[in-house]
Length: 125
Image (cartoon, rainbow, N blue to C red):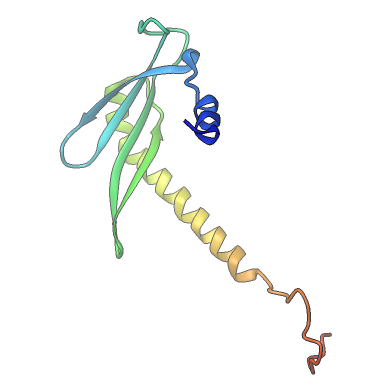
């Protein structure tokens, strides 16, 4: 093993105090709900931390399917299934707003050359 591999291996660490058990549920049509249950290092459920839910689906675009993943605010699987459409809609709205913001920033950028050529006839005002 060379020193670069050793350095990379030494930097990668799993936080044993932040472990989750992942369970996946799907209706085989719309999407997937991932349930992340906090666990202790011995694998038992950690009741001091909250269960986390994520939704996964695909949006059809002109370029093809776009996979998305979004958090779902829920206390149990039933709530996660009920809140799936709203959570997805909010995520997509946020994603579109962010894309519009980035587009506006890009359009408003002014490109200024770093140095002018020595024999330039351009006059900057």
